[in-house]
Length: 482
Figure 1 (tube, rainbow, N blue to C red):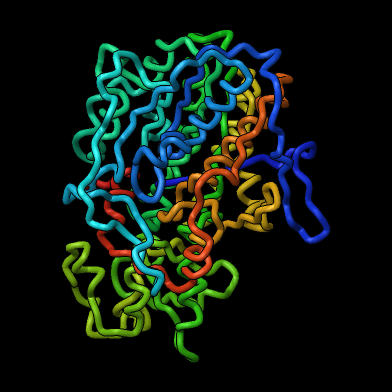
Figure 2 (cartoon, rainbow, N blue to C red):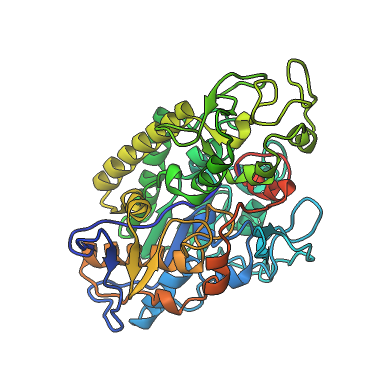
């Protein structure tokens, strides 16, 4: 999953209010409502890690319960939808394993730093894989748009280049359908949420443009998206479909946390030397990280930020990459052309443009195809940009796009926190209500567990996350290691 996020909400004029101080608010205090005129007896969610409830670098039940589809299902049930049990591929806490078999989930280990990462706990296990029907939540961490109709998806993701057992966890048996589409169709839902396409650009971005070296092409994305919605519309002509578009990856903490903390550490008269896209050798490209278009340092760079200026080749050793001249790890790391900040740990200006152009093209396709097929659209992209620019206030509580302290994102900087998922759920509900005239009550976001306030407010330094802790996240976006 060289993923996440990410996501969150729509600036519809009827539901968003911006005060003179630039603070965005959401009137999410509706406690009673009605499903009418909708009839929803079965709801199915299609997507990737954002749909699955993946959080803080792991899939685990105490986070899955706050996945946005599960929260939507609860709100539908409140107004009389006879959904029964909304089935998900539950994974017991502390969740999915890393390459060592230990739980990959990130936690705050110490406020000094802060130190964030896995605690070395024994991983959990699936708890309801014996379910004899498809899951209602078909979110598969790591899924790209192609996987929706890929007939080998349920079996082929156990080998290179994507060693991702979560495909098998979700799809399980061929008899239940060989694709995500087949399993969704088998449930004959009245309502479908469809949120795929994030990973078609996210893997490129989170890997610093290294693996994959480019997002999915706009032309291929357009064909695949039309095929996906045509398949749903043909098989389920009366089903109400709600799609979400792709958030700007440049708005998430994974890209906006390390750079601002490193910039003050660059000495006067010294520049950060960094590799641009495709460069694996010495580099004279330089930045102070404060100029327009400066590189965005990825959260994976947190393990190396404290080594700036030191004669070290730790990044090469961690990745098992031979050091070949003219790279010279006896030179000060990051401050010398022969030992530059690696391409894989930054999104340079060109890569930022590549990602932005892909997202613009993808979202144009999503809007056009959704309108032509009668699907409702949740404009997550616009909402996230709004959160990045303004403080979001929900029932008097402020949320931002900041890492840890912002409250919306989990500890991997990509996927939403439990409260972030509640905010996402409310945007889907907002669009459903507006599109079909229902009055489904919103999720009480502030009643959902969040990062404890003293912890969130104290974690202000450069995060110290072990380099190998990102292996599981990288796997989801196209890596070869689980």
